[in-house]
Amino acid sequence: MLKRPVYIILALILFNLTVSAQKTKKIEYSGFFDSYYYRGPLNITVGAGTAGYIGDLGFMPGARLSPAFNVGASYMVWPKTYFGVDFNYLTLGGVKNDTSGSVSFTNTMYELVAYCRFNLIGKRILFKNDISKRPPRVRPYITLGIGGAYINPLVTVTDTNFFKNYTASTSSNIAFVLPASLGFAFYINKRFSILTDFGYRYTFTDGLDGISKLGKSDKDSYITATLKLQYTIHPFKKKRAKYVPPAEGSGTSGSGGSGNSAAPVKKDSTLNQPILPPGAPEPTKDSTVTPGAGTGDNIIAPPAVAPAEEKPKELTDEEKKKLQEEKEQQEWENSSKPKPATPAEKKKKPAPKPKPQDTGGW
Image (tube, rainbow, N blue to C red; front, side, top):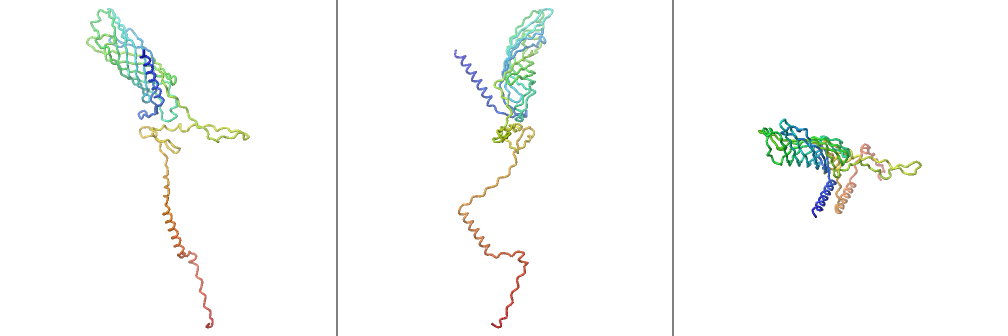
């Protein structure tokens, strides 16, 4: 009785951790794709479709298609690249009629596949404005994977000459599968999208139909067509353009000097700046953007800054006193020396000496 509540609690804890992890995601940069990106979020898919058999009895003998159902999850690890897991329930069947009778089979399969899905079209993020841009609504993609399937074929034979060319297959109930598919993703909004998938499954067994040709060991395969509904858990919020509010006191007075009308807000100019790599300094007004060599990185070049002037060293009281004494000594020496004559004084003739007067011998 206690197991079910415990499972429910564990599922809620796992869901909460997933949501919390999505909120704390940081932007990362991929040099291969030359784009910034966010990892995630987690996507859940549910779908239904059809499957057709290709094997010893031919290509979809009797033109028979069988139902198929799908449930899975995916997670974006790199730009345009998703890794995921799918669980498929499907049935295969076919009928081959002949003049001497008929051969038919049915096979119920449970398939588990791990895959990598790559979008051929995606959004490239290099500047802050690119984050708010809406991605393409329709995105073609290709998928490659590997998996395994549990098979259980049941054969009905009414042809009397059948066993002349065929024999019952002794293959295992476990078959390895290599899936490949081409599809289109139609994004309705940030939470819901529709995926159409057309795939081919190559198997390493000859027992999908329960029979095999004598003297040959051709491998069986099958095709699938699936329509999926994808739900995104906690998608990233679309970042709107930021606006800078007017500074205080920047309003203009109305008519008659009564009332103030606020100046119109301005769009944040930093939205056109490149996204900085982790740990890089914030750009300034004088910064310049230069492309990285060979990688397409946007590197912020810091502006040229003049070297700061060195502050004079503070003198102690003794040094100040000694400096003052030297200054006074220098002034005294300069005052005791005769001043050099100026060029004008040098050109000026000296005054003639007065002649001595004759005093008559007194």
